[in-house]
Structures are given as structure tokens and as C-alpha cells.
Length: 212
Image (cartoon, rainbow, N blue to C red; front, side, top):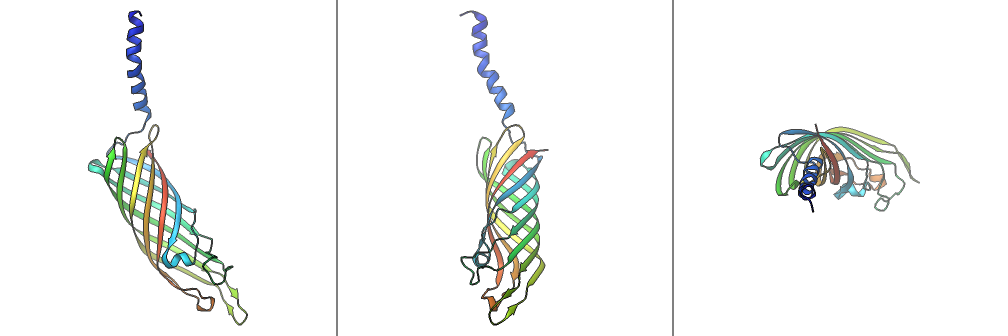
């Protein structure tokens, strides 16, 4: 084997390693990131007697990942429950819907990391503007009119997130969050529909983040 081929064989692994390192994303502390969110949201507690889980949960956010494992995020999100839980309602064809629009601040701290993969504990708080609709219903003995509710409520959440590097400037993040919205859905006793005091949700979410 001549000298040029020997040099080429030695340089090839180094060149490939350098190329991969430039393609795979690495977290840059202090840099801002832009993210898109989606997920499966499952109602918990008394809210689960009204609604079924929904995939209509979207959001956009900005984040800053710091040194020492800290991260900060602000997201604007929309959520819609539009399918009633017919298996738990006494009257199965009720017209129920709950829509929520929110702004949330989250803080995370990494408790495990390996290379560019890390798992973080996350706490958050935000303000929600929500609208609830229950359609009218005709019972044999009485007509139950429709009812709408609109309100502002605080919400608090806690959970865990795992961040994975993708190509170029992109990262993928998976999270599981418990959220409590401090609000109440009024009952309809004629429909055997109990009140909801504190709207609880569990979110299984995925986010795509890109360095700005």
C-alpha cells in the first residue's frame, strides 16, 4: 500500500467524525430556541366524566437553555375537548365542548444527561382563557336549555421532559405533564351531570425545537 492510500485511510475516519459532529445538533447554552408543540391530553378526575382524551392540543414557544442544566420557556397554547365521554355520561348524546387558550412559563432542571440527551424536571404556571359549552337537551319531562361559561383561570403544572438532538439545529423533546386549571364547570342536575371543580389534565406531548 502506497503512502497516499495510507494517509487517506487514516484521514477518512477523522473526516467522517467531523462531518457527523457538524450535522448532529448540540445544545448551545444561552441560545434562544423556537418550538412547536402537539400532544395527547387526557382529562383526569371529574373532568374525565365529561370528556374523552383529545389530540387537539397545539402550541408555539420560545426557550433558552442555560448552563448548569437550567432551561426557561414561554409558550402560547390552544386546547379543545370536543368529544364527550359517552361511556360515563348518563345521557350519551350530550353536546359538550371545552376550549382553552393559555400563556405558560416553564422552568426545567436536568437531573440526568448523557452527551446531548437529557431528562429534566419541569414546573410551570400560566393563565388560561377558557370557554365551555353544553348544548340544550330535551328530556321526557323537562327541556334543559343550553349553557355557556367563559372565564380566566390560573393553571399550575409539573412533569418531566426528555430532549434528544436531531440534525442541524433541531431538537426533539418528549414530555409528560400534570396540569391543574383552577376553574369550575357548573353542573346540570337534570342531566345527572356533576360539577367539575378544578380541571385536571395529563399531557403526553412532543415538541420540535430549532435554534434561532
